[in-house]
View: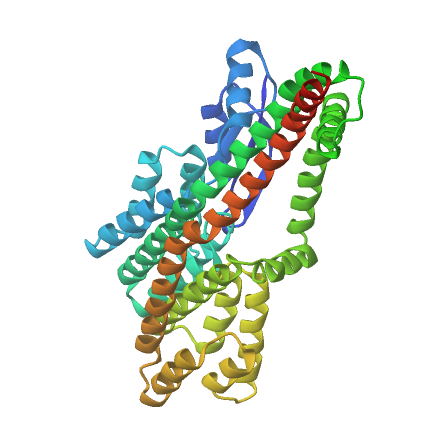
Length: 411
């Protein structure tokens, strides 16, 4: 009798898993229900036959992430369904059945099982941190507690759409520089591996001292041709080591601090993070999330750990009794104009409205910077290409000119 592995929820709502023998998955599901366990996933443990092999392979290769577009669609649908008065359990069950992303479908089914066991929606969503962020869970929690869950999903949908638009603008601004850099890399590889070796054979027949530029080109070409595998291994190993280092807490903090100091793009990274902070702060503060909790959640949602630590410092100062504007001033993150707008919002009690204005200000700055990014990088790329062409021209044509001059002198 084949064995099946399962995950599910017991009568108390706790997640359980194990293995059960049964004739089929349906028989195992019936047995689990008899034990008062609501099954979430049931998978065959033993691989038998070609069909089972293909099923296991599909399971291994299946995408296990949820895209931003899918989250936006989910929040829009939840807003429409909750506004129309559809029960939450029924709404999530319907969205799970119609979702094309199998991983997201399993997540929603798990959320539905948690709701059926008596847990709140915020707790059910918090069990899946890879899909639902702290910001997402906090907004849903506020919506549940205030009876405005539909408005919470509406605000989340608007926030996620702004996040998608920001990512799209960054991709559009960096597409041209990345394309040029890749083209330059391919050109250098072709020249060093194919073109220069052909010229080197011709130059070897001169039996004369070659110019320094030519010797550099031939030496570089010989090294790349003989040790290309070592270069490739070094590049791949270096990238792997960098990404592993960047995944650590210390590495991520250091890299985020370095990104803010990069020429040309460092200021853009900073303004994008501050725009996220102010927009998210306004949304959560308006929804009724306590100030200290708002700052804590925002510190992890800005996308930069260095700025996140500065926001945590603001939270600590506010917790000690300092005013928000004074704490923001001490952090050194904000310009005098933004600090003045914060002060007005704090004095008038319209802090959320003023933070929306600050977010709009930063987003306009980001739009302008991204539009100017290509214009700022283009001269640097042109200079790099000019230097590359100059070295190639000197290395290839100087020996020919010297050969021609020598031939004219003998004539």
